[in-house]
Length: 141
Image (tube, rainbow, N blue to C red; front, top):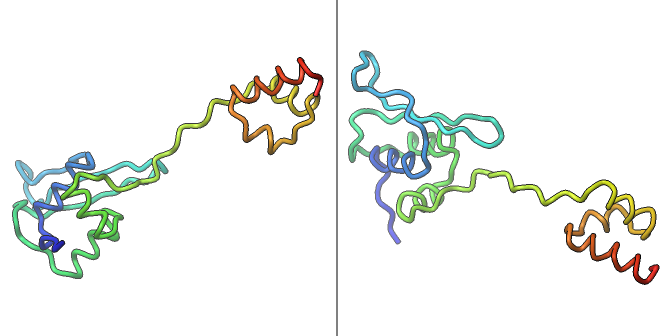
């Protein structure tokens, strides 16, 4: 599939789909000819991108486009077009929710009574850990 030429309106569309926050606007502000967007990342960094006014079909040259993708949006070109054309947001390293932690007493029983290693205990879900302790109490092994 042939992709469209990179342009300001696609740049803004990307920011809107990924829910970047508009922090500065050319309207009503003298001396600025850009719209500025920011996106906080899970690791604490804040990405910032600027789109020249007017946001229209004005295209980007190859060097400027590469700079915008690499340094401002921090995505590859396929990720950019997937977002703009298919509404698939780029993977930004969203933290995965932690598994439900095992209670300390349960871990202690599994290690010191049942005889499991720390690695084995770490691989168990809460339900599996409870089932294993129950089996130990029923059978003694």
